[in-house]
Image 1 (cartoon, rainbow, N blue to C red):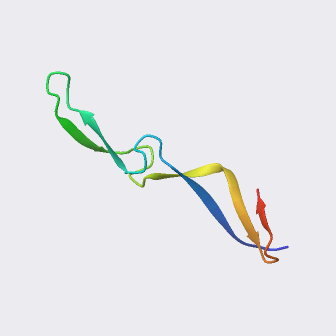
Image 2: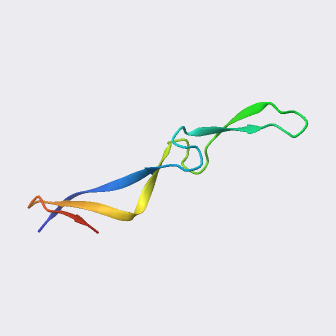
Image 3: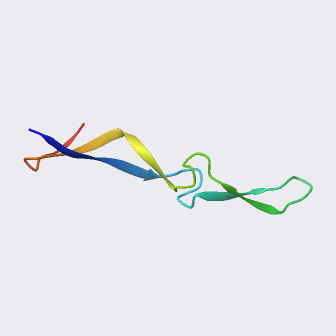
Length: 65
């Protein structure tokens, strides 16, 4: 069996909920919303799910690694 390609599963970022950004209050005294880029997913909105990789072989067999 020969591996053709490995597809990584992704999941939605829990911090920004898939937007790539979120809002925070500037300060307690100044309740203005400030837009911040999400550092958890690098503003992509998705994270690679490291728990399972899907392997597709030349035989067409799909397996979890």
